[in-house]
Image 1 (cartoon, rainbow, N blue to C red):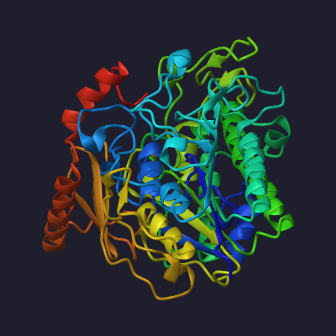
Image 2: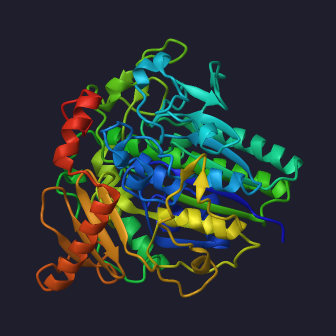
Image 3: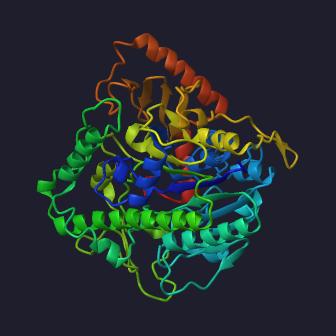
Length: 534
């Protein structure tokens, strides 16, 4: 068998329950087909936030070891410099050294801070803002920062140059897929195996979608978040998605009952637009798969699909995150920034988020959201498909983490792990290959899984998870009987909890975790904000 191609597809801010194959009413037939023809891992973990996950995914290291312990701001420590460290190597750097063509299309966001409203002052490629081409990718098309207008991006790059002119029918999800397919065709024509990192911004805010995609969900969400969340949980249980039919976590305490909502049409329209964004991403993945099939490459391509964090509960206030983005489209149309009740989202002159109630639906049956390391913030399905590499199988339940993706890809391709690059010694990977699990073996991760983001902390060791919110007490859960984290065992399992606390603290000290009470003032000063909540 010739060396396999690899395609790593990352969704942005998509909750665990937003796919058809994980219980959603959203149409995702193409991702579902990949799961049916391969496998779905139902206990894959990310790092609770976009760029920490991307840094970890790309390097096989925990975010702090990769240099992005928080986000893009440089907080004055190697673990928090905000861009990829030189003692880390990306999947692209490992594979390019082994003869692969390395391709990227989409969102980079591992290269320091970029002020989106002042994009003419950007200097991508300087020491604190490395581009994909400086970190192992032969080709790049996409954005450097964390979010963009889907119809009218403020700053796009192709390879090393800014792309100034965009067509009238531009839509980011479609554009990055079309560009990726062109890159693949070139690699196939050259008879060179390729690695493609397809990094979506869908369904991250702003809520932008094609009218025909939104229309597909007209009326679907009129029954409200309580009913949809319950229906998703019941569907999951009927599918055997989990090894135990856990109770669903209660509606988040900050979310009111749907029956108490006064702007029901607007709220339903927000979720319909979000669903349309996921739907369109799935359509684009179908286009990609069709292209692979036509090129005779599908069977020998390892495709991996996952999300960078749980559903996003961020409210789009006019003076919050929205203030950092241009309020005029590239062709001069005024954008109404923020979640304005009654203003339906979706078109180019809006800039909204779907907010906490719908994020609570996206993360069903789990607690909490992006930013947090309870299950709602860190859980993603991993869909894996490689007909020449492993046979289809049922859902696998073994817990694993995004640091495991790099060693999995290296084992699949036969590429060695670089120990040195550009005169720098490279840290050993902290992940473990998932290939035995994907091939049906009784695989168990040898090392614990660690989490830290904004003082929210956790360790998963076997079936147990120790977790805390910043500034609050530790909680202990048995993930096999209670993954929705409803029955805190901390008092009955005090010795186990203390041992896990020691393991977590040893890890935190080793990777350079900064106390959030120390890091937060540095961050607010760098961002010139009063709150980190946006």
